[in-house]
Amino acid sequence: QVKLAESGGGSVKAGGSLTLSCTDSTTAQRVYCLGWFRQVSGKEREGVATMDSDGTPSYGDSVKGRFTVSKDKSKNTLHLQMNNLKPEDTAMYYCTAALTSRGETCQEWLETLGKHTANYWGAGKQVTVST
Image 1 (spheres, rainbow, N blue to C red):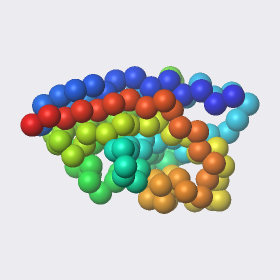
Image 2 (cartoon, rainbow, N blue to C red):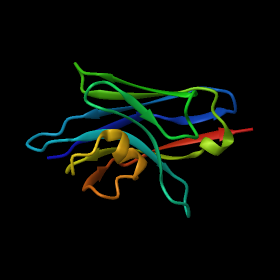
Image 3 (spheres, rainbow, N blue to C red):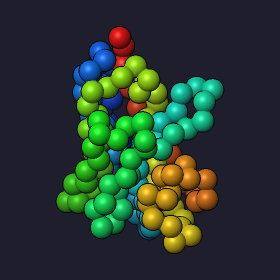
């Protein structure tokens, strides 16, 4: 059973910071990649951040240098620290688990927006950045 628990997010002014966390409590199912995507209504989703099994982080181009992804292995929790937030970061952020794999890295999974894998999407957390 796939189980993702998201926390964090909220509202902040431009230049501020927020944190998102995702705890993976999945049982009897392998999770190949865990990451964050975001989507604004009416627009295509965007890959935000993920981390490969060797600890290598990957980021979407628009968040590089501002967002940092980390993993607490003891709690199986993926954290996303979002600094210097901009109004264009406003979106619903989804913790997502890749349940299948074609042998791609998590970076490739993020870059292809998870289109080639079966994914489980968390309920989402709203992030709103005002001017």
